[in-house]
Length: 418
Image 1 (cartoon, rainbow, N blue to C red):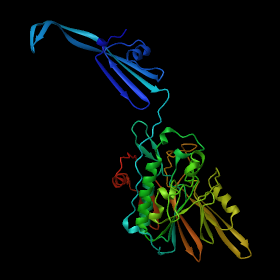
Image 2: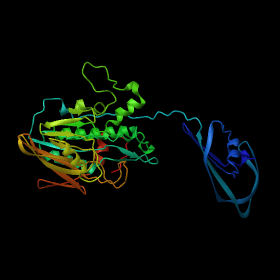
Image 3: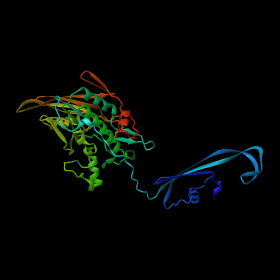
């Protein structure tokens, strides 16, 4: 039987649903003996792990006979001139609560403050050129031990986009959809615990980048199209919390639902147009060019664009497949001969296997597109980002890591990785 006199030190660390007990001074022969001594209720707690260790302790062999009276010692201490060794034991037991207590994590409020000069106003066309920004896939995987957030989105590729905007004048900027990954909200796949509580930081950082785009392009009209990943939020609400579906705040103005991408990202404040309704989320750039997120995926390179252009009578630009593709065809009809194309400009997320997918070796490419027009006829230039470098119109753009600036601007305690 364990005696209290055997215990040299005792530590207890208890959270809502876990308890850790560490005891030094005796050897434990069974977990039951330990929990009985510590009066742990095994109807409430379950032992999930235990470990024990030993080490040699040293002390002098001393004979002593002391008494204390009024703070004074009386007696003797004799050093026998020997060193005694003894085996010391340390035991650790980890328990979990059999009926877990619901834990509501503390989530910091999402605050996105657009620059003050971005008040809503009439947009003035600054040229006949559009910028096409493909899938951003903003999201994170969280390390369960350190809490560090490893981004799905590629900050270096995104920085190239900011540089391109800075030296060009765009009439419109189209973000093709899947701006945010929302892995945690998926109703189709089993969600890994590494994705828990990552939506809030994804929203915050995406807001930072959108604010930068608006700051560099104050006169451009900006469109964000809904993609299948963006739609995960609405699907999760409809599946798990239908009572808040389409819930809107009280306002005399038409507003977005409270739990929606455009509301969480303050699209009204940033003067950004939201194009919802995936898979029917698309914009007619001109009567000859349709821009969408896309819903067709073919396995072979080039096959998706071939399938799209085969069925179309106008040119199409789409995202969704994360690949750079371009296929054209010539149509002969009553109006004569004309050419159309179907094109995908790639993606702006990481292509090294970080983004959850079917395989670590995805056939993906980073890139973006520029569209110029002549009498409504679109002329597309797909710009590949290869090894963090893009070459466009005689300029070289190399991505810069903005991680430290993002953390400083957000003033948050999110621990990002590059």
